[in-house]
View 1 (cartoon, rainbow, N blue to C red):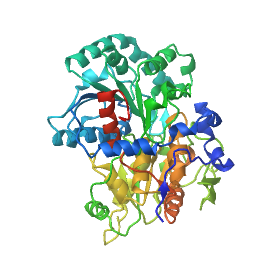
View 2 (tube, rainbow, N blue to C red):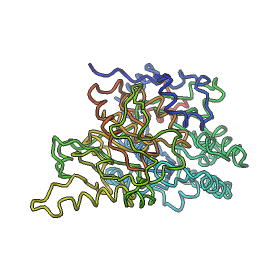
View 3 (cartoon, rainbow, N blue to C red):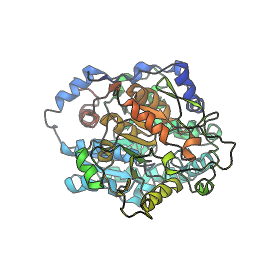
View 4 (spheres, one colour):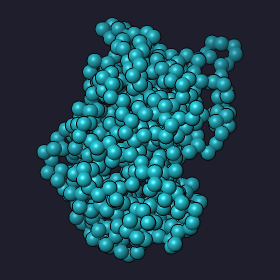
Length: 510
């Protein structure tokens, strides 16, 4: 039986599941009871209206500026989908971002007359600093707030310069994912502004200790609240204060989108063959959105003793604990005695024995993955017949959705693009929580739990290289398949909504 359409408000409220994610709920300070879940639900009549309009060409070509935060790769890759849909309908888009230009290289080649990237130096002045991470799953609170304060020192000059640029370029509509300064420039230039996101950074910063008393708090909140006209909300959203507080904000200004996600382009077995992976092998994809998987702090572990758990690890979680997967309990196969200073680590604790792994971590891999790669390259030392490699390092420019579709399990952090890609391709997911990143709450409650094939790996086991049992637990969930699925045409729907807003000032053109 095919999975049902994914309901936006299908939240697992069991005591076990709630306990598993207590850290995330605590740092956001959000009361689940106070959230109107209907605000996150899809509107089938509205979507049907927009899908009908997809059959006809737009009435006129638009000049669009799309501002995209440079925080991680996920914002760039999801915006890519909407940009591709807009360009396919003949619109001209200038992308303003600090993300690597290589992420848009194929789009630039396909639409050289319609798509261009703003020079990085110009983008840096108006693109927010995001948050500072010490590694793939840990936020550095102090550095994040310092970066925000430094960025805001020249924000008024940046707004004035951006207003001039928008007028000179004859831009007609401004899209944002999800900076907070360009919309003021847009409003001063008399342009409609559209947030295309599952969060705004005022909510992200609000979950970081120290922001509540920072002098910039009210400025960041007001830049969103006073200068955004419309919200095209992505799945897995958290509360966006500019539109959801007060809850009675006009729903006509909001459209909840289907999944905005990149799809695989290359058949699964073709991807595997190119990497030297047998078609029938079990494969885990390891990807952390452009960050090193682990910090360079595992020397003791790799020398033969267990590394200390991260200071940000969820308390009370260890390999010996009973773990909760979608409401079911499982005991890990081999508990680790963390009181023993000489616990020996082996690569089989990172990736299950016999499995192949694809490492899609650009640049520095981190100590654990470096050790895994080295062990694989020397495993046949002393043997007459070389063994086939089981660790495969993906090219830096690999198209990640192809790798997701080629895998049996994905291991990574709980960010939008990774979550969306595993849902779209129906691949089980092992995620490491990011307790200070408020976006995670929405992704878990409104995307991953309804999907039903996600396993949380606590920080202690992540940093200690004890991943195998979580990978096996996730793989076991594939037998029953996902509980639900999402339509994946959010980029196309967003493109038509943008046309309507620019032409009529409404999301739905009645």
